[in-house]
Image 1 (cartoon, rainbow, N blue to C red):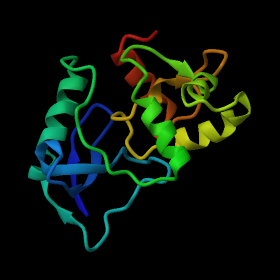
Image 2 (cartoon, rainbow, N blue to C red; image 1 turned 60 degrees about the vertical axis):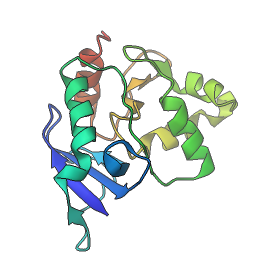
Image 3 (cartoon, helix red, strand yellow; image 1 turned 45 degrees about the horizontal axis):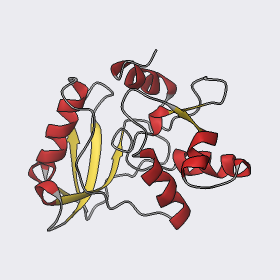
Image 4 (cartoon, helix red, strand yellow; image 1 turned 90 degrees about the horizontal axis):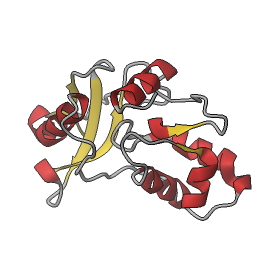
Length: 164
């Protein structure tokens, strides 16, 4: 596993990935986590720090944080069940500066409203914070609900995108 730390307004971001011949910059991302995040991976003894492998991801993150980009063009290699992957891919369809509810996300993947709790679990397990915009998912009443990186960070990301 390759990894690096990238500075950002949410604190130092831990990026992990695997070599990929098809990925921009040559690395498919497996996770992006923030300090103190629930279920964040810990750097393993056999991991290799390689900042150059994440240069393209760092460039795109910088563009996002400075308001010069609204989407990411990176390859992801996150592991999860088929259901979680469907939910994570649906996160990609939530436009910059917009939000949706867990029920709305269920509708995007063709799941019943009864699946909202499972949708929430999949959103909470998203290993690619920011890149797969789980921060754009809010409660049915418009409230900010759980975010693995903390509600203050969720609020900051939504403010960055112009969501009141």
